[in-house]
Length: 589
Image (cartoon, helix red, strand yellow):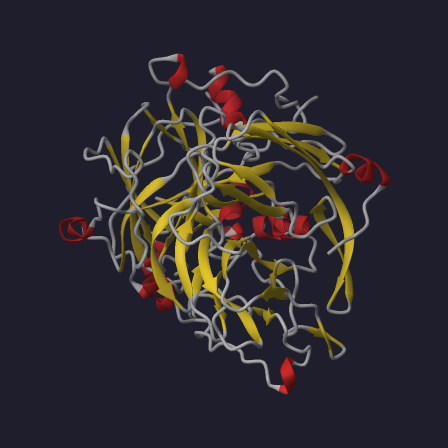
């Protein structure tokens, strides 16, 4: 972890956290200053430039209570523009603070600053924040811990809660990584997985192991582990040798508790588990292993890392005994992920867990890859050659990430014409066998199906509409799973399945009684997930896969939610200090 900041950053960080409590038991204002800057870190015998907040990797943790107001002053000392997204925060009527680059705001320019203000209400558990421009979130991220108003959980109060941020270590400059992804080059991989920014002793330099994350525990006590997957590309398996977990929450919503010896977490997700230190006193390895779809799909090198659970009173050499390590699933075994998620149901609360009975809008959204011609050409002589660029699609539309203005500003000003259209399709252009594995290799079968449009095609919904979406992962040139994240909303996850969604058969599986509430849902490899939500939050809300290369490639869109009938149900004007977009694509002071 970095210790050094520039002089300007040091001055700002002298008052990094200001906490103003309105009154005992009442809402508070939690205020932070985030200084984003470059620093050098040395791992694996190389010194690498990284982008961090306040000299920390992961960045500062935001501790709030349900109902609090958060104020974060962002100071950008990078040579690049940056925004911060408050991942999973519902942002009720505060879409201007969502932090999605070029969707809700233009990036803060080098040397610039802005202030984010928003409430955290109706949520308890773990959320997180991260950069939302290019690949910078690989190192610019941190936890948001939301505690209950009365301090009581629907499970035994833990002795301590500990964020477990799973990430990746990159030596390649993250801005260059983004540029290469835009050009269709996906040959770059991280060098290691990380736990709370540490590479662990499975990585070494000249035979010297890297530093490991250590969790110190006392026998008999319970610990609330708050998992966050901040990785760019991979879902991860996580185990602690000799211990089991009780899963109690995800995405700041309680779950019906269930026992497991392994957590599976995809990029963008958060999962809360209780771990009781009930093993014989000693040292135990914790291990995180990346999970990827098997060949012939695009492969990422095997990634793993490990840390240590260390019981109090045990000698540094583990009393002379070997340190046990957990047995992990194979890198290409995707079924444990599917079955782990099959255990998730919501812990129902009156007024919170009511699945809308009616459906006003239904979308069937296929997730796959396609290709477009380079240089804006209309026709390519050799498809899938140097004349084309591989893109990611939703219903054969690849989102064009424009960099001139924010979509929210254009929508609010009534100036969207010529920038975006509101015709995102409800279905793919033609039905086919979406999970036919013969669609992965290039050939005549996939060539008919891959034609793609590159455009900003959005979808508009009336206020208070009930929307149902079935996400269908496909084998079209790939067979990745897809962690789909919707900004500004929690949604009910009604069901998941493998293969092609069958409305006649699979609707019978829908859970209307106690489905989980999530902001990110992991659509299984060549499988599907059905979600439902009510459009009660007006604004412009980004929907995208949380694999970074899929975002860059265009697996995204945005939902426009219209105003309701009253001022309280309408998008307010931008805050007085909101920085609108300038002509250079950055926010202007």
